[in-house]
Each structure stands twice: as C-alpha cells, then as structure tokens.
Amino acid sequence: MTAIALSVIAFNLATAVPADAALFNWTNESVEESNNQAWSFDSLYQDIQGFSFEPVKAMALEATAVASVTNPATSKAKPKTKVKTFLVSASAYSSTPDQTDSTPFITAKGTYVRDGIVAANFLPFGTAIKIPEIYGDKIFIVEDRMNKRYWHNVDIWFSSREAAKQFGRKTVTIEIVS
Image (tube, rainbow, N blue to C red; front, side):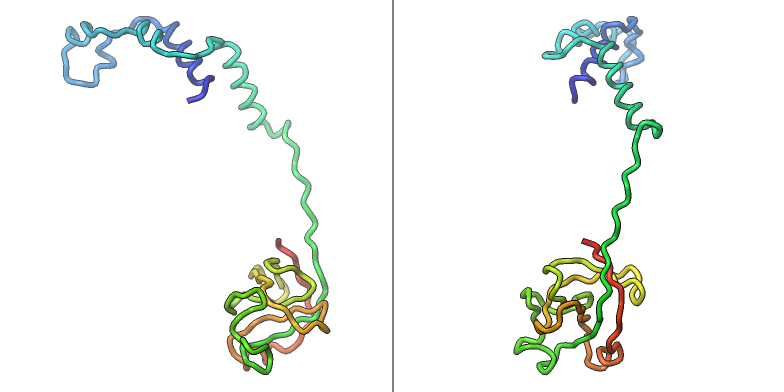
C-alpha cells in the first residue's frame, strides 16, 4: 500500500464520526458484544506506523495525477513512425540439397526451417518483415542467407519444391516490422 493510500485511510479514520459497531459486525454477535470489543478507531489509528499525515496534499496530488492521465486536452499524440520499406526481388526455395547447402533443413542462423522463414543478405538475423501485397499481415523472420551475389533479394522458404516453383520470382515491396 502506498503512502498516499495510508494517508487517506488515516485521515478518514481520524475524522470519522463514531458509528454503531454493529455495522461492522461480520460475525453473528449481538450489538452489546460488539460494543464491548477492545479496539476503537483511535487505537487503529495509533497502530498505523510510519505514515505522513498530509491528507490535503495527498488528495491534491492524487487529483492532479488523475487529471493528467484522463484529460485528453493535456496529452500529446505520439507521431506515427514511418514504416521502412524496400523494393526487392522475391524468390522461393525449398529444403533440397541442390537449392541449399549440405544441411537443407537447418538455416544459416542454426534453426530448423519452417513456415514464415526467409533468407535475406541485406537484413540482420531476427528481422521481422511483411510482404503485404502477397501475404497481407503475415510476418516473416530472417533466419537464413542466400548466395552472396544476391544482395537486395528475399528468398521465401516453402515446404515443397513444387510450391517454390509455383511462386517463381516477383518484384515486391517489403515492410520492416522490427
């Protein structure tokens, strides 16, 4: 519990009008039994240690904090960041030794090939990209490399050679997600 909350509780307890203890009687005792209990609001107030009794300041601070968060007139809109795009040649490959090295199911990063993996030499490993004109919002991750003669190319992994051939080669705009 924060110091502000303790201050507010202490203020409320200190300024409270004595109430019938039966209102706070959660057991099935009678009103007489609950009135004979050894505690009071004053004793509870004295039991709270290490609080700062500044209820007016605490309430003013709380009201200011709430106003600054909830008042749209005082908050500034964040400018949208421009999406970085590249116009590249996109091709397709599958896990066959004639299209890869001697480990056709292992990427250059050391992970296993799977749907959503691309090879690109001009982007660092782990870069997330989109190819919106073909795949919409699907995210691809750079985890493989191509032959070094291919620089601004993206090679999309497919599970079969036929699917890779059907994709062919296309000029596409990619978006860098992260």
